[in-house]
Image (cartoon, rainbow, N blue to C red; front, side, top):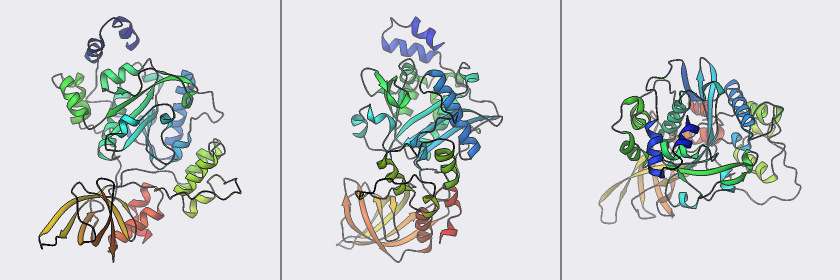
Length: 420
């Protein structure tokens, strides 16, 4: 249908063409009750996602067949990458991966310029590794739209992501522009995108902050089965299984040492083919003893340049800072804690505060975990970030920090008391 629409609308101005495309959009507010949308976290789920992706990419000419029968990339090894899956009657029929900005960057940033995106605040994630089983590619989005809705809810409520970027085949870019309001990163398609075997690609960007308003304008008056604003922003879909988290972390790493070894050493040669820099980065991320035996060996005997430690977990813990100004007036300021250690933390604060003044902080570490701390703001970083030191952290803080430093998966955080 998409191909036929493109042929019929070829002579129309873009605004009318896109309006025509939107008039054909259909969504099912009540998808098959046996459809489940969740994070891929088991070996079986991940293997099925990577196999589905492999078959779709090989069939489209985006990669050559791999002996493993899977498409696995270095980005899949990162704790900041989350793979989503759609399962129908237990079978994986759709998948995509969300790659948060990380030590390795994004696959598309080697080709597309993200300067315009970075002018706006908020975290960026690349939508990558998208595939739908061939049985459902001509069924009007019966799998694709629920998967996209899951992606939207996960990004806006759990993944602390404002901007989505994507590289797509030129034949598909108008669907993303017209139905979902992506904007192109470049004026012309790139002829060779190495990440998908040199296939042509167009880069695009979506600012999730403004998409509800845009969707409401274009879809708000339509009936439920044609109203993508209602579908994405208001509909509660029981098929979606969002992760259960003890703490207010914003990513969901699932790779145990056993899973890393299985996918990146045993089934594929991804780790063996990494550059020395990429190997160093992995060692800086998985810097706990349990992972050392499965990480790729560092081959160079030359001293390496210092490389900072990269966090396995990201977070956004809301809190409130109380300080007393020089005139004795008490001031309360809302904060978001984004990095922690046993002796301090980094917080996002929109209101300027003085330095070297003692204060008290209440931090909501999770739904049932609250920490009360005495702190001092010791430095400002950029426009809205402040670094704090603290004395005598309480038990909840110690448990939280220990779990972040010693844990490796989101399930570890559920059992955080074992790290204290």
